[in-house]
Length: 146
Length: 139
Image (cartoon, rainbow over all chains, first blue to last red; front, side, top):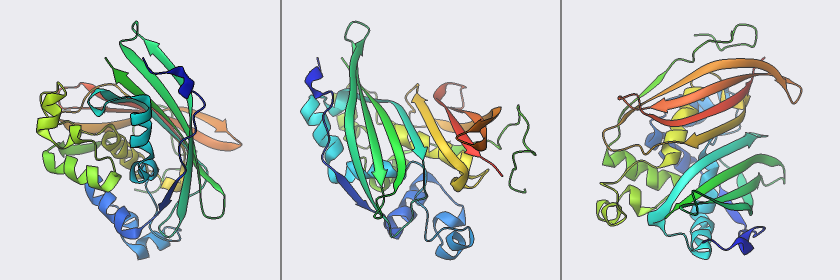
């Protein structure tokens, strides 16, 4: 059983510099061919200051920083038993290459279903840019299967 | 095709579907690197088998990134307000995912005229992998 003492736990702050090359790699990996995601001129013509980070990209903040893995270690969820149950994003402002995004997360819920065969961990996050403006809110439901 | 506007879109309209090629190991390796999700269960067959899976399988967030492409291929990303999904099934090697979206509601959301779009991704056998919804604000 995952210890409920972790409800309210704040993850270490994760800082993600948004880099053009990483966004171009992400576009390649997802099969994205729209030019505004890889070409600076097209991005600016579309009204962005630089290449835009696509809608799901901010997950990289806590993966790159190690905060995601640290959380799994703390909660004693082995990678082999981890499932991603749900994911939500609420968007407030665009994020573009050249921005630096800071993500702060808290564990908001821990509960079990099917008599403990499945345990659920809910993490809520706020992402701010270098001007301390809220750019996005995230909610992740992680599942540990037994 | 001109960008959709609030008045030009009707409830029941379908977004142009996005058909992906079959998932292969290269796709998974590239997404692991680009996304930062290095969980070996998606890229290391030995690890996947030790974990009780028949083989590596797709990252959930890869499927969500494809659904994001469905939306941003139809309307600019700057119009996207909310994007929620529930992962319902494992996407295996060889699965060719098709992303679809259906306009189900026109509403005012935080003072803006928005569409609510139901999202679904499924493989070539019609097995649902992800369901979700998006809110987009249109001029």
